[in-house]
Length: 486
Image (tube, rainbow, N blue to C red):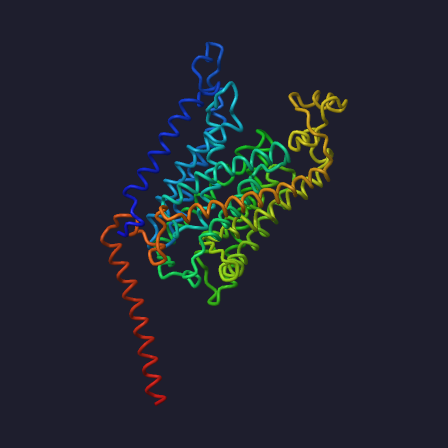
């Protein structure tokens, strides 16, 4: 192995530093929240009212998405399966640990401590999903050292952006279309723009799939598909809001799936299905309903959003991804701009429309629970009336629907700007010489960072042999043409 890409010292040293820092931070700042603290339990405490039973099912579902869904989905390259799954495993584990601390300072910090419960883990997994989506833009072209450093930098940038948008702009984004999908997309595009490789402009010989890798990847799609309703509904208000979120997500995913099959067949020259479409485009509906997932948008709107998201995603893969690579120096390996960027913009627009159309006639008094920013402020007589109907309703900002829609637009632009700038700066750090970045020749190749089994070599040699035969065949054809002309 080339010494410039050896992990022998780089990876252990980096992990050691991370673990020492994490031990210090956990020792100084992290304690249990009330539901996990034994000292606060007594004979009047009902164990079944513990928040574990409310939050853990969603945490478990998102766990499956993070480690199995994303892991399998990223194993689509024939000679990069180990790296796709294992680097996902490594990066996700670190990102969750780091997010627990960083998000803790913004969301769960009081009494000089971060109070740790299952809800912290769930929030940290959403931050981790941001990192893994961004990973899709640079898969195959980065080392595990670069990916850990990328997570190290992206989590704080994301957490600050999330905190600023939610605290000061104050938006509604239950499914994370703005703060998860758009942020992750444009951060990843910023990183891959800086890491642009001119020699890969026309592709790489290892950028191929196999029968087995495509099956493994579509298994990842199925895991993501099945658990996406939990992802979209986990942080919504319990009760009817969460119920709608599950329904809308399933409907959106269903309509995008059957649309993806139709588009794949009709635009294939041979009228056949393409596995890349099944692996990615089918998931578009889960993103497209995200911003309005808990609102009273109606089932038919969720169905239509699934179709719209799928269509935009499909044509994005077909036309926009090649354009970005050829003209704008953005080599987006997994097409995250299609599945998360375009669909995130559609979802955000739909959310704004839903906010503008929301009325008390449709929602009843509960409108001010969903759109908390429209609730009357302190001192408004209407607030007292609403609190009689909805005990526990908190004062809002008294915004009109039009005002809130403008704040949503501001949040979209602010999030895209923060993520793109953060991605560009992170990309500059990842270009430093000691990051073990693979050479152009070694991209998309497990053998660079793994001890691989013998059948991997045979498969590799078979591909090389096949390429050589093609070159020889091409040379023979040219020689024959030349002889004929003479």
